[in-house]
Amino acid sequence: MGLNVPRTILQPLVENALFHGIIPNEEFGTVCIEIFLIDHFLHLYVSDDGVGMSSKRLEEVKLGQTSIQSFSNMRSIGLSNVKARVLSLYDNKSAFYIDSVEGIGTKITIKIPLKSPDFIQ
Image 1 (spheres, rainbow, N blue to C red):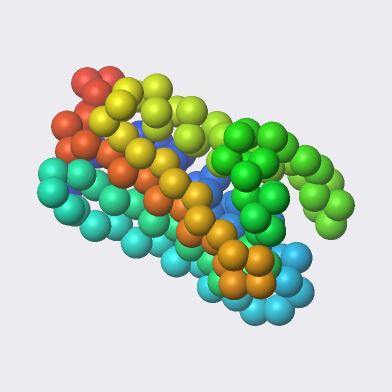
Image 2 (spheres, rainbow, N blue to C red):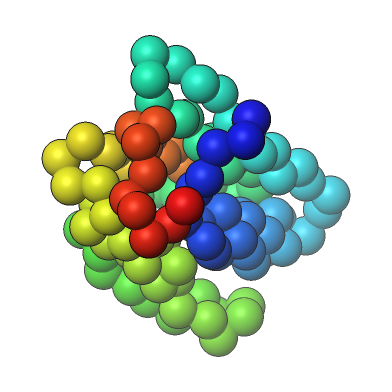
């Protein structure tokens, strides 16, 4: 689309989808990256059909509470780092959403205005 986005925004989300969604499921899975232009906003979606999260765990993640995943000994800090970065770059003009259903998968949505901060262009 010829539009600028902050570096390393998608990569940690794809890693999270793999390490916390697909790999624990111990079967093949899918990670999808979709990008749309809607009403002067760039919408970035990263979704997986992995293990998903319980409603309790989803609330913890939304609050930025991390825990070590026993299968990988990794902390799930990628989401909170990306969220903090997006919200700090675009103030109240951006949005970051996490939706997840246990046994179904997880979807991350980032909504950023078309006009990028000067230092990204």
